[in-house]
Amino acid sequence: MVQELRQAVAQRQPAALRQQFASVAKVVAATLVLSLILFAIRVWLGRYEHRLHQRRTAESALIEAQLHEARETDPPPHGHQDPQLRHGLYQHLKLEHQLQAVRLVRWLLFWGMASLWALSIAYSLNLFPQTRQFAQKMVLAPVVILLTWFVVGLSDRLISLAVDRFIQKFAKGQPMTSTNLQRIHTIAQVIKGVKTVVVYIIGLIWVLQWLSLVPGSVLALGTLVALVLSFAAQNLVKDLVNGFLILLEDQFRIGDVIMVGDIDGFVEDLNLRVTQLRNPAGELITLPNSSITHVRNMTRHWSRTTIDVEVAYNTDVNQALAVVRETADELAADPEWGPQILDTHEFFGVQEISHSGILIRIWIKTIPLKQWLVSMEFRRRLKMALDRHHIAIGSPRQVWLREDVGAPESSRPMYSLD
Image 1: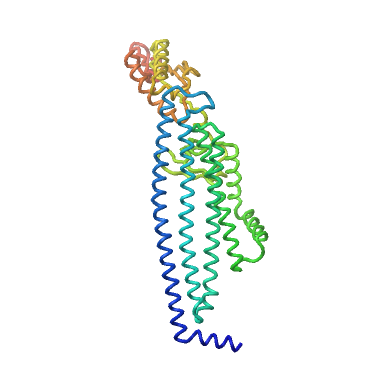
Image 2 (image 1 turned 45 degrees about the vertical axis):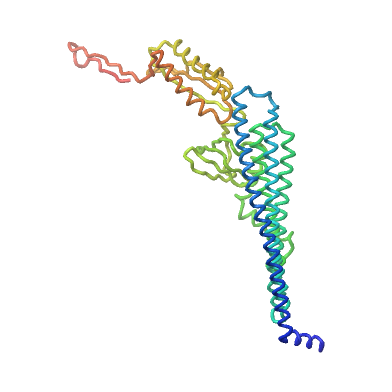
């Protein structure tokens, strides 16, 4: 006891204080030098990450160009893929993996600098008897929180790397078509979103327990959370279950065009809780997955456009049918539009005859997402073809019955308007 008292008095002497300040200066200087080195490495990696991002963007543009070129030429047999395109797709996945690795290293460097300064401050405060208790009580909690944050973030990024590696291996066994790429991208996004939520929730629960802010064990807390969710968050549970079923059954993917009720749009994002659509007006619509009960997918495997044209009632119907058929065949034989058209002979003929004219209907089967462009081009060509053959478009007809002036007024026929 006496020895500890003497030691405490000695540490408060001017000579000891000067030595303590000198030690603090050395620690701060060493920390500053190491931080500058780590910061320089992090900046260099940031530039390297930017170059990788540019390469990935260029690879994506090259893949899109190759896909467009492949559509314009004869498509490969089912289940096969152009070797050059396949190599480009693998290179794209490899660049994505490298980007994740560089981001992980930069993140580790950031946390290395943060941990270095935290340990330096804790060591400096521990040198002085006046601040030693403060260092032990006030510095320990932030350090533990930072370390937990570090471990959680590290786990999150390591799992992301594992997911990318799994997706890369999974993609090698799949035909590299745009459909499979959409499905692989959707699965990867959902897996990453779920694991991020799970990892950070586990880290938060552990920190709250360590700080004695929540009672009981993790199991008891998990039971309590599950009970609260079962009563207060039933819609959330329904969203998650329905989102899982949507993904499992592959009802739609990111990149599809779907209609839910009276809402239609391009699927921009999909996770276990919500689905986000971009409608033709450019508005982003967010739908909880529990509200999605009936889905119309307009771009799965193939698409179809239904085109109706009504010609005048007195038109030669055979001539009109021949003009429509010839226009469809010419469009299918066009080098630019032909690769987008799968079939023009599914359904064709006179759909309806009415007072306004003869309604001719034709179905054109296309590759996904191209039905609207094909229908607009077909209508443009059909208008010019009808004009060349002097075929008029149908319109409502008015029939007038002339009255007999000599007949009694009660027996005079009235005119009718159709």
